[in-house]
Amino acid sequence: MDASASPLAICDDSAMSEQFPPAHHVDFATLEPPIALGALDGRYRSVVAPLTNYFSEAGLNRARVFVEVEWLIYLLDHDVLPGAPSLSADERNYLRALTPTFNGDAIAQLAQTEAVTRHDVKAVEYYLKSKLDAAADQIPDTVLPQLHEVVHIFCTSEDINNLSYALVIKAGVEDVWLPAARQLRADLTELARANANVPMLCRTHGQPATPSTMGKELAVFVYRLGRQIERIEKTAFLGKMNGATGTYAAHVTAIPSVDWQTVSRGFVEHLGLSWNPLTTQIESHDWQAELYADISRFNRIAHNLATDAWTYISLGYFHQNLAAQGSTGSSTMPHKVNPIRFENAEANLEVSSALLDTLAATLVTSRLQRDLTDSTTQRNIGTALGHSLLALDNLIRGLAGIDINADAMARDLDTNWEVLGEAVQQAMRAASIAGATGMEDPYERLKELTRGHRVSGDQMREFIAGLNLPAEVERRLLNLTPATYTGIASALLEHL
Image 1 (cartoon, rainbow, N blue to C red):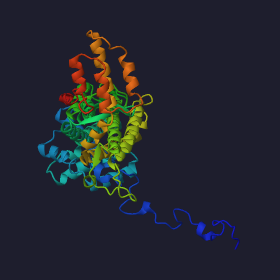
Image 2: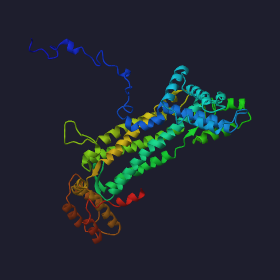
Image 3: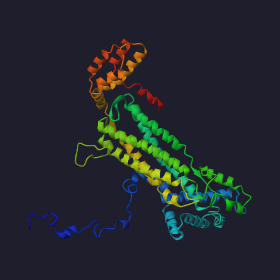
Image 4: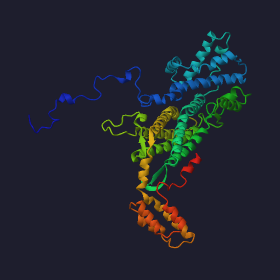
């Protein structure tokens, strides 16, 4: 054997021929239960699972059944259709029970029907008609089997879809996302209040700067997040019910005696939504774009919180409680406790905001009176909110797993007396304005003392004593330390 030959050259060729995946690999796509493609439905499913009630295909179909049922009941209860029968209490109860009992069998039935119709909303229509027929077995002398033509009457698919999406988005945001956002804000508020008086060295541009308190710095995030929560809470969830191009053309042609705008508005508001009076075939989705922009902005503020928390950990200001974090730390370096909660939050907030930005940009445009770009786009709403929800969960857990290291912050303050240069300079200016002499060039004099230099407490006090300041001003400055130079930081938490 040639000793100079490359190790690769002398390897058995057969050892190099195997590729990934192996030729006879197990096909994961065929396994039962199905293997999740994405992280939200796989690794992180336990955190985001509540969103499936709203943003899964099954959740959307349940909302469609709800809208179709309520439309049928609304038309009959308001005598909109001449000659149509009235519903009994038992018949209303039967119809309205279809939504809370919508289960795996219903999901499977709809899937089978859609496989034939190749149309999701049409499949819901046929599903509801089958349930009207089945009512005869439960309600004696029921009129429900006679109401096939009432199901989906005067509706285009988008009439059902826009209302269904508005309902699931409203419920998903209000029932799942907002509680998590409020919890983050509440936990952060508690942490801010508990540390309102703990002094810390600030860093502007990464350099030592005027001190604050940890509580005040956390309170900034509380205030920022709170403003976005308030905006999201005020969202108007719009809906429309006005036909193929928003003109009520079929409605007034078939039954001209009805005030169809009043019926439309009444039904939309009956669902707990806000009526949009002017649309094409689709509800314009502008309110969705506004909502996603607000959530995306919330995400980015939370992202800023995550990166600051990460930095405070690296500075030693936050100490991570390993047990609370539920983490082993590094796989090879036992001394480390990795800030994974904040890093996970950071990454998922970026993904969520990117998706929300795309949704907001895409949904406001529909060619002429209708195109179907929104159909596939809106199916990503749950994914966008899921990544945000996962991030909020990690931030909440991350904050719960830290202790504030006041001693580390105190040591940092005590090695940065130069930050008092700002206070001395401004006191000199104020004294000069008040008539004191010898206060010339305060900025330049402090720059010479402090820029690029570490200044000890003794050096700073010696400098102050040599300025010939008015006695009261000198006394005030000599008593000042980096730890006490926090202004009214703690009092600012009153704004929470």
